[in-house]
Image (tube, rainbow, N blue to C red):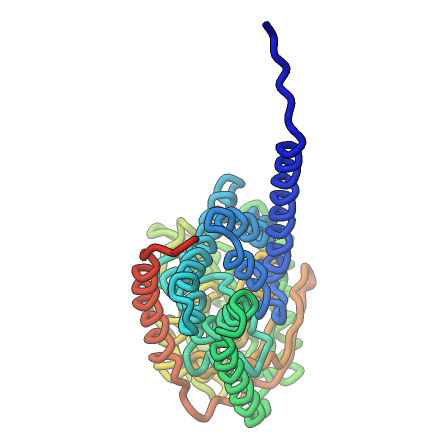
Length: 487
């Protein structure tokens, strides 16, 4: 005997309702991920970073734990997908997917832990959960990962001069805390109502104080008053397969740039990172040529070069002086993914150049606050940074370096191939900037920024605040393990 099973009208209605609810949740998760897409990539929108996490946090607070989990993950993956094109330049697709998944899981951890604390305690202090947990994770990444905290949301504010001054007080940890506190307070206010008005009010006062103090600090910043400095970059790389005539043309063009910039009054000329990787004999010929060029033009010259000998490959920055002496040599500390077979350096170099104490670093070195702070402690008034970017990360690479200058109180000159030529002062003001280009290349001429008259506090307060958040984050995670009613 066969039986025909049919759905009753109430069951069909219930199924349709569930489907509509699920589709609306998917749409909400995607909508929450869209603002993140524009702030989690290598060229974030600064203003949007203050509110981009808000939809995700609000959804989590208004949903069950299970729904909050998958919606947060979907939104985070969508936001992080803005990095796919850039990550593909550095790693294979499986590694790209793994990195995005891990980062999305970190978002899931922070949002669910914050949600749990808010629902469990329903107190104003829980507004601190989201920013404290993110600062804790950012601090651990900066200390433990080979790429540090590259792409930290804090760097999105590198062009926001008023709030950027927080980095001089508490470094990236302090800046990131403020940036995460704003959406946390708004989410609690929208989801919890009047109970969180005091938390929102305190947040508003803190942000207003930070912006006002920062604007006052920048207002008193001195104008550039130093001698002229020149920067030059040619995107073309001299590799093993480069025809000798082409390689010679690139070197000749760099020499012409130095002569032209010196003729325009530059007392210092900065060239980019690793123009070529050469055997010792070839490198020695380049050294002799630019040593003579520095003497002939009366300028300081910084040149980035790779040298390969029996000991291995090294990424170096050579500083040539106008007196024709042997160059000061600096070896890169923090190596990029394509440089895994290079040898890392450990020494620092601070030299008197054009009337200022100047330090040498190479590209990725300036992504790490401890190295930047070490130069500040050594008395550097400006940093000379040859660099080589990957086009898509040109803005991020330059602005992370700008933030290092604000943290440690010095100007930064950065000449990047496949990126931008940048001159910034100790307050984070970008005084001159120009995109690099292929042959014949790009040049930039600008006065050296004035030295900062007083030291910053970020060298000790920033790490202290960051590791305090690590400790508080661990405590908050333990507190969140208590059961949440009706969650």
